[in-house]
Image (cartoon, rainbow, N blue to C red):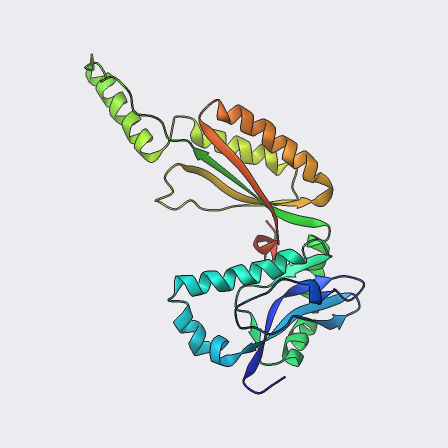
Length: 252
């Protein structure tokens, strides 16, 4: 390891033979060539030398204020992680995981062997999928509404207008719950993300940890439910497969 460099780690890969890192795409801007560092039998650390002038503590703190810089780094990290998704059991690291040296990175993985073993068991043969539900925008009414015939009807119309402004309809929350419950049966774990106050027409944002053998069944189930929801003005989208970032900590 040259002076002035750290070891950037993309993830741990469970695989019998050394992965062909030479075929991997470019990672973070300015980071050196990817290496596969042996940690234990069948376990490799996907790492690269990172110049401290660019990825030291202070440069990263400055860079975090630059959205374009962070995006470029995140895309590079994801390119490498996704490249190895089909080559074994991948335990992806978070963005900007750095160690002082290769030896320190390997030592950390060995020292955390019990947790790593649990994660290897949990993620083996599985990948992460994302599901999102969103209500489509409605075209404005072509004719003005007739005057309300009662105070109750006036209040009901006001409530309906508020729902439309938020992109909601009566029953949308129930639809979201039913959709997640249905697709959850095809997964071994699920995480439902909290929707921000400004979520607008977004009704559901969740991720599932799914056995690779159930990929076709998941796609069919999503397609079937998406057709039914489309008739109610709701879009359901499946994304993935992704590295299992949301399932690296506690069991869900």
